[in-house]
Image (cartoon, rainbow, N blue to C red; front, side, top):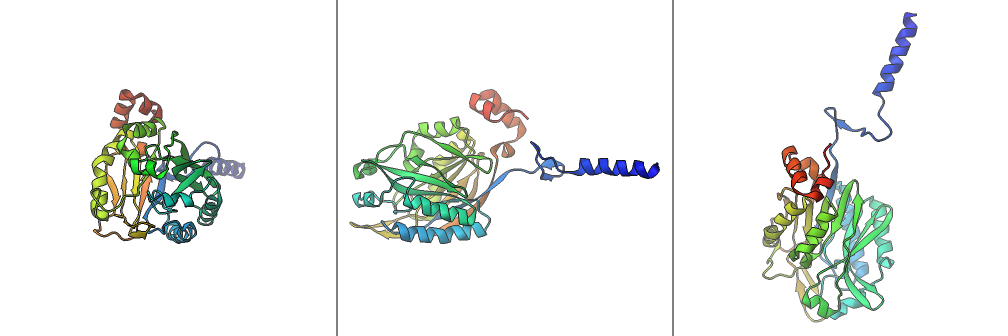
Length: 314
């Protein structure tokens, strides 16, 4: 009888020690669910003008390096697949999306089990767009078209996009804005409304008043991106192309640089070297609600209907 009772007790203990299957987190730290994280690689690459094949090959090697360092999301700059330019010749490299380059990027993402955000020139019938595409281990996810092309970009032939799509990456709501979008309040309001956790904000800045090299360029970006990160309560990932690219009429000189700002407005990763060489920084992002102190979360819920819906009381 005693033996039978011991068997029953052992069975009960074994049952309660098994991990839950439906709707409950299995990983725990000190009795609490493990915090969700997203490891990102933010790359400032050198690019070849109009040579999509060469850029894809180079980006595949960079993605391999990023994956080896634990990256789950790999971010490349604005128009990186063709090299940022306002020379009309850049339109010759524009493609349909999804299309040939998308398929090749899907293969790279599948091979290294990562998500890739990369800029390219899009052709849609008789219109052209500065687009950023997102692919993952399971294929093509979607694209974002730059909403506010500059005067030079419009003169080149690029049209403005109108939508602000978002996607899910490992439990993080992910959105994209591009370069000059960062100067327009409506774009960050769209990200806030979409309740994003992470925004990739790629650039194609040349050496000049925005920054002569990576350290100065990333420092200048914090001036207006820190308030935007706090406003949206989202991580903002910012990067630029690097080095020099020979183009039909001139050689473009890029500042280089990469920076990551968290939902509290803190710079958690930044290129701080005063040169224009190719670079990669890595950062581990946490869900915004895991970073914001409980009292501040309570205030956000009281003060703002968007945050009230996004950061529901647990």
